[in-house]
Image (tube, rainbow, N blue to C red; front, side, top):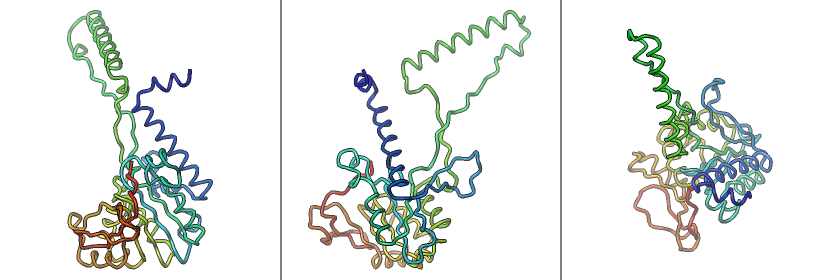
Length: 294
């Protein structure tokens, strides 16, 4: 019976359900296997406003030597994931950040895991009640009541038809964006200002995949002096940043050439130099096709 029910669920709904299960499981692994703490943001959020979160190791802000910061790409992935497709088709080691986190902890790093796609919450759109025009008329009360009854019955039939025609549209939803974290770029800057910049680590290292690389470059543009002072090296994987479109200045491009490397999808042997049209960091082969964000 249960198998039959699965086949009756629309593919879109089944996919969403699977995504929720994966995300919940990865969060559990981050907390139980990696011993990371879930930290709510904004740090000064009120009880009623939308919130997001990041994950940090116990010593993330106090480790005096080194801190590792992980940023995933765009799309449906959440904190602790690189690519959900790899999680499903390969395994957790391929599709999540967990091997990176465990190795970083074993080698004495503090760890901060960003959550740049958690930008808003969805809530049901409030219904607008339109007052009947008959209320202000001089019609007898009995006639107004009959009109209101007909109107309610008409609306009831229309709502039933809409639900039958499009069962996914039972409720109209609206997005409430999280303060100062409404985009991956905003999120990276927020976490830098409230956590990374305040950490005791002498050396900060970033690992950024896909759109995460673009978010890092935007962070550099907004906090250039601070990033240069604190960040030692950046490992990018299939980064989609563009120093021209993002208007990164000459000093940023020079720093990236010395301190960043972008491993890109390629059939060439690992670490083979790959030609780039952009005058920023070196591009080298990852020795394989890297994961997509989805």
